[in-house]
Length: 285
Image (cartoon, rainbow, N blue to C red; front, side):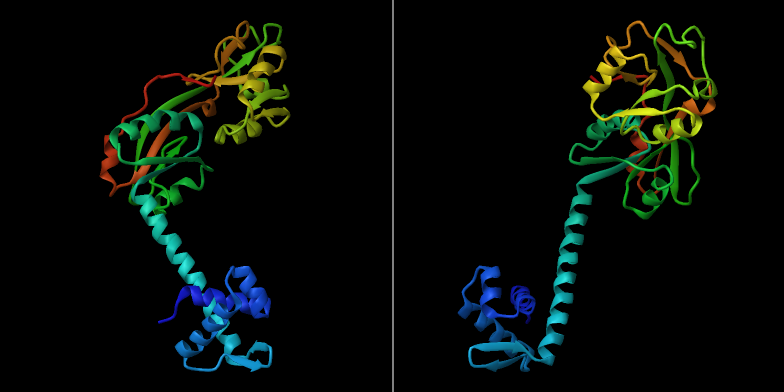
């Protein structure tokens, strides 16, 4: 029976070309490596090397054996990866969302409903999520609207409404509501990692430039000290102090009123227990 460690040693010998260099890489003695090469010849039942005084080289059969060994090692590594991934999936609920806020609402429910499971959450492109759910790489998906797909259940989950925060001297600060068209052309502050909101804002406001902030503290400081508009939603609390004095105005475009939907495979009936999120506000301080 072939031994994977012996095959690794054979591959190392092929890579370095000498027993001494291969033994050094493998942190074993040269005699030990030499015995491994002899053992492999016995296992294969053929000669793999050309031996001369103080020199050993692979023969043609040996070179073929090296290629076969590399293939077996790759397959062994992939087998280990698949088994570990399967075990991880047994204890993990994979969630993909188009935006962060619905994940904040969903995660506490999953922790309560499935106490023995960990939750792996990630932001993904809207178009990719349904395929990941149907393909099984994702257990739960969150989309900014309903979707129809064979074998997939789609249920309403959470509402999010977009607002713009304007300094009091901004030309639009006195408006009861605004549209993206009215905002187009004004440069704005924008948080990173906001999912589909980023692309949607750029699409609806092509003449605007966005100063994207990855750090929450720096974002708050810029809101407090600059005159640039920023955005918030009914689900987000930046902390209050930095937006004090700003006009918080709803954006009335249909795209700014999002009805998130939860999708999962119909066979996964355990997720029927998940309830739509309430009107909670999530603190970003």
